[in-house]
Amino acid sequence: MNSMERVLTTISHKEPDRVPLFLCLSFYGAKELGMTVPEYFSKPENVVAAQLTMREKYRHDCLYSFFYAAIELEAFGSETIFVDDGPPNAGAPVLRTIDDVFKLEPPEIDTSPGLTRVLRTTQMLKDRAGNEVPIIGIVMSPFSLPVIQIGFERYLEMLYFRKDAFDRLMEVNESFCVAWANAQVAAGATAIGIFDPLASPALVEKPTYLRTGNPVAKRTVAKIKGATAIHLASGLTLPVVREIAQTGAAVLGFGVADDPVALKKEAEGRICLLGNLNGLEMTHWTKERAHRTVKTVIDQFGKGGGFILSDGHGEIPWQVPEEILLAVSEAVRLYGNYPLK
Amino acid sequence: MYKFDGSGLPEDFEKALLNTDRIVASSIFHRYAREVEGLSRIERLVVGSLDRIGEKWEQGLVSLAQVYMSGRICEDLIDEYLPVAHVNRRDSPRIAIAMLIDQHGLGKRIVTSVLRAAGYNVIDFGAGLTVEGIVEKTIESRIEILLISTLMYRSALKVRELRNRFDHAGHPVKIIVGGAPFRLDEGLWERVGADAGSRKASDIFALLEKEVLS
Image: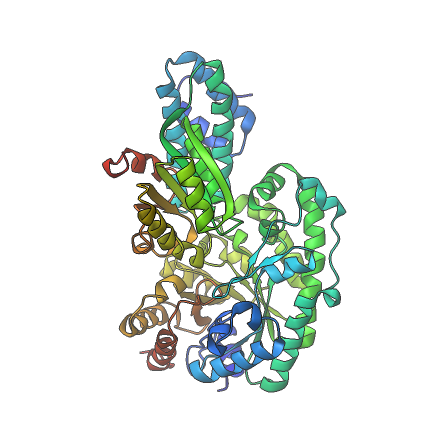
């Protein structure tokens, strides 16, 4: 099987030839090319070269066209803070008061230089990879984007006490998110990952999420013209598996916070799981630890398909040594062949 | 309208906090303040509730948003109460809190609220600060306990640099760290040279009582 067939089979809750491996390597590509992070993201050619080289080296099953989360905020007029050896971070929130949301309009995709670079990258990856390997594009969920758009504190005040402002912000963010996701699909992305950490009950309690973020997710997923994954970026996942499956997303990204047996049972036949290697611990793993952990995770989640091995946060830290990524790749080939032993 | 029957009061107060019901929480707090004497018993109600809420967050039973809102409500109640009761905030040890490099976390605000709700004075240095900026402010303000919050892994690693700068300057500040990277990698606080790591905001009380920080 090629990577595309392997992934499509596991998403259909069937066992492919082996457990698929997604290494979510975004700014890590700068390390691969020996560049600083700002230099790396300044040209689509850099990202394309690194994605193709890293896939050849680590033999994983996806190409990742994600740049960084703050790139969406650039389109809204915010600045990004770059460092040479880590993920770019969003600067000060673009919305200074809750009432500023009433003046906010969804930005145009094609007038944003950052978003345009992502689309060009996606097109170039598609030209090179064809249909053999899935290209994963990323958007921030309309429900979680406000953390960097207006600041966490003001957003929570809005979420609990300012329904009028919350509804307006979701209207703007949904419109932008759908347009941004569909532009990536049109450029060649196979699937869109939606980062939605606030869907986790670790951040927003389930009753509030069901009243607010879940309907937003349902509307958004329904309008995206491609397969979708929702990623909770390390947060507790088990209590909301069914509700997230009901959005129509095909894949759910999870971290290390959940009971693996219960999570596998809850997701079985409903939604394909993607996770859950601890990226921060990988920074100081040994090769043996990498092998042991990969085997354990495959034993916990691999049976019957419906599982993609990946990190639990959606981004491999800069400080993870190459040897550990190679060891993970080696281990999935040792322990991840179906039928599992 | 909340009816005070004298039983289950801490549970009712906690429930009001988790429901982000400022009116009910305030009603219980003021009724309690009238019926008990001394700041310590009021603190016990507030700190005990926040501590139990923190425990429930650790167990996955409540959300970070609820932890935050509970802290803010308690902070406001204590802010109103202290001047009326002619009680001053605790100025010792001298505590400051800062977000190192990162801008968008909630942890700094939660810890500030929890400490202020317990009557401590906390100097907030702000967010998005450099190592140099924090060192300068800490020495200038003669801070004894420095609480550092981070959201990104790279920022968490910068605590090592912070520690080295203080050692070099001979400033004996105790550094307590918290935030997502320290929760996901339990040994990280030690590796970056902090004096302690805090998994949840209310852990700060036990840490403040520990001999190492006294």
